[in-house]
Length: 403
Image 1 (tube, rainbow, N blue to C red):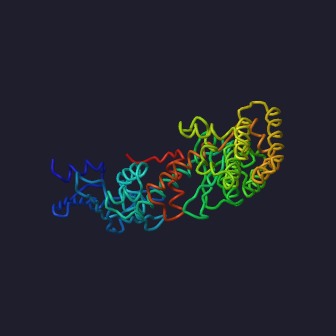
Image 2: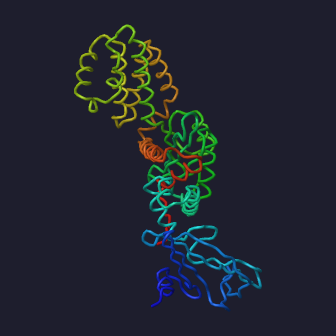
Image 3: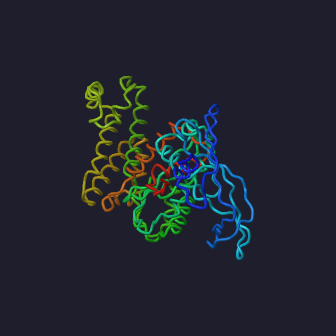
């Protein structure tokens, strides 16, 4: 078997396509495979599929998977056929998608690597500019998302994550049952919910069918949900609520540290759960928590607030929450008073947890994965790149990669 026939079989080419020339450039570590078709061949019109005569050809080149350590390129005279119904049209070659400079198999390799490595690292590995690779990512993500079915989505969590330092955010919408990313968009205002509702409709879902939404206390998110997810019940995420209490506890400590020097460098012993304290930290906490300190009082309120979400009965939870709010107000400690009024003003959404049992725990995990990927990549140049990576990492997409 000669080398032309060997490479024709290796590439999986079927008539009329065949390899008719092989050039091996040792010094450049490069293999060039030239694909052709017999004179007089008739090829399918890309619109109607009717076999038509060749009108002319256009020279094209594609990067293929390496042959051992040698870069491999396919060259072909791509025919334009003359269709009686649709005029002159360029045929689609079976080894690459229209508009791509890579073969399908090479794109499959790239996407497999990119799922586990930063795009820039993969680009350096294969010797291509990362902009080209981002185009490949965008294509497969868009194709997979176009096929997504959101008709069964009922419970949604939303939260923002940072794209860059400063006020540059992406809002994530997650199916809390399937634990997959549904939609991501720049910003963190009410318009992000409007954009999600439109995307939901485009994928077979119904904004009026959304039953539960878990979120933080963002007024913009609340406004967006009320306008664009009109039947949804809002549950305020208990982890965000606990974070508000933690901020208040530390504010009390920082205000008291001037009078009580022993409170210096003790921030985390008041904010960590007991199971996460190191022996030294636990000993330090034991020595301080029973003293007549404002910080110790705030710490006890923190523990009490956490107990609310260990209960299963809404009435008991409401009773404990009301008592907590009253104690916080009576403390006359400004940070605690402020958070008490915040809880009071969001009463229904806090207690909704006893029916929905929803939280943004999944979103917090997703955010951690995204920030880790962003850190490995040393950031993303554009919102589009960050969002495409979010879909790739968190969307459970069926990419249908060529094999």
